[in-house]
Length: 231
Image 1: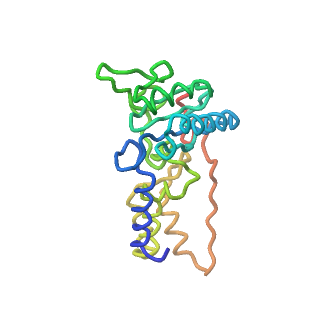
Image 2: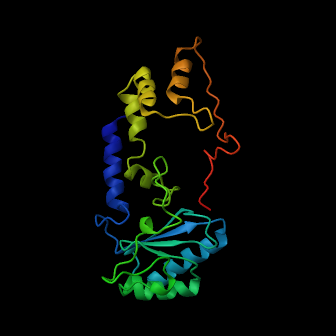
C-alpha cells in the first residue's frame, strides 16, 4: 500500500463485502456475530450449528457468520444478529435450530433467548441500550465487539490505518507530536503525564537510534485507570 487513495479503495471494497453492522449497505439478509469467549469449544459448537442450520433453511450465502471479541464476562457466548441488533445469550446448538428457522429464515426474533426485551412495535432493544454491560462509552475501543478482530478487512472498512497513513504520508514528525499533544492523551498511571511531551522528548533527544519502552500494565493501586470495574 503506497498511498491513502489505495487505502481508501480497499476500504470501499471491504465495505461492499461485509457492510457495517446494522447497515443496509451489505448484501446479506442477516449478520450473525458470535462472541468468542474463553470457552472456545462452545464458540466452535455454535458456529458449526449456525452454518449447518443456515444451509438447511436455504440461507447459504445469505447469512454472514463471524466471530467478535468477547463482549463482557459472559458465562456463555453472546450472539448478535443484525440488522435487528438482537442479542441472544446462553444459546445451545439445539437453540440455534430455532433461531435459524424462526429468526433468520422466518423474520421473527426468538424473544425467549433474548438478553433484553421486545418493544411493542416488534423491535428489540439494541445492544447499546442495555444497562449494566454497555453503559461505558468506548473511544479507542469503539469497534470492540462490532468487528472480527481477526479479519483485517473489517478493520480497514471502519477507517483502520487511515490515521497511520496520514501520519506517514502527509505529516512531519513534529506534526505528529503536536497532534498527540493537542489531543490531551496522557499516561494511564496516577501522574497522567502528557504522551505528546514524551514523544517530543524522544524526538529531540540526541542520537540516530532511539527506543521507546512501553509498560502496557501500568497502574497505581486504587486508581483503577487500567481496570474495567463494571463487573
